Image 1 (tube, rainbow, N blue to C red):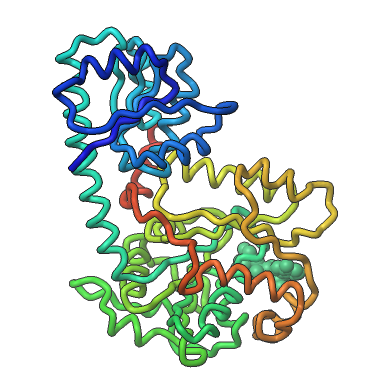
Image 2 (image 1 turned 180 degrees about the vertical axis):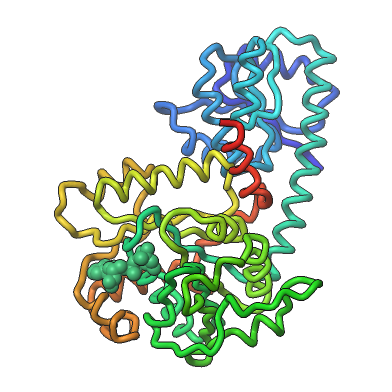
Length: 408
Ligand SMILES: Nc1ncnc2c1ncn2[C@@H]1O[C@H](COP(=O)(O)OP(=O)(O)OP(=O)(O)O)[C@@H](O)[C@H]1O
Ligand SMILES: [Mg+2]
């Protein structure tokens, strides 16, 4: 297999020097790429990916920050690519480089043997990593998509979104959808869909072998042919014993049985929510135009970044997006650091329909607000393009967060 090494923001002189060094020892292609505008790591990753690189070596540079940002962007979006920063190393440089996800630091004055040893080692790691990712993807492709709706603040519109999304996806007729209410204390998915479940998530008996598909299916209540819900317990105390591990198992079992699993969560980030995030392919990150809601969502995103949650694809949903409360859509997008995927307007039809137990997408399908929910569902239509990248660390999120808290 031929290998591709791309020198990013390097000089022609260094490129020539490296070509001479690698001559005869590197069976692959060497390209040089230079940023055409101001430093924008995401654009740089996009442009660099056109070379289909195995390794991206950045520099030589003394200006570490743009190089670190580029490594970080690769780590997030293309972890299969190895990144190297070419700069004079010292302890601080090493620490920063490794933290940003760089695979190595190369001294521009390194001798021939060191350079060859470094690239050989990185190519080996890169092909191993690609193989792992491919295996991971083929495993993932046998199970359905898990979409978790998250918001830092209560009353933001999570349940309205989760129920409309689930109903909208099931209406399509091509996908079987499971809707899980992880608001274990005050979950109201059953009310919002006028369901009369005989059992809830709290009735799950945990046999020694783990959650079985048969016992889980017995707890589901159906709404039409394609939508099944696992509702929250009627009594707030009854869900207390459900562990994060059980949540993960439940979602994995459902993902194996259904095309899509939509997960509604309580406000903030509970252990159950963290577990769902870990198991998700997609996150619907919801806020409205209040300062506290926007800032809260930013904090949630910072936490996800800190915990290196890169597997699920993130979608930013702005609810009540037309409210005139001093914060604009652009302000929210800038603070959150993401473009808005879907903006849902404020409409009386939403609480009215929720109170009737009929999502607005069915109760008033021609309204603007219903169309926006349809737009959100269309992100996950069978031929939709919202798939997560399926890569990255998946386990131990809770443990990592706990570890962080203990370290503080
Ligand atoms: N776009 C909207 N326009 C008007 N009302 C809305 C909109 N979205 C949600 N609502 C209403 O706001 C209230 C809270 O919405 P919802 O229950 O979906 O929020 P939540 O985030 O699930 O709340 P909780 O954290 O309590 O679970 C409900 O009465 C709902 O009908
Ligand atoms: Mg809710």
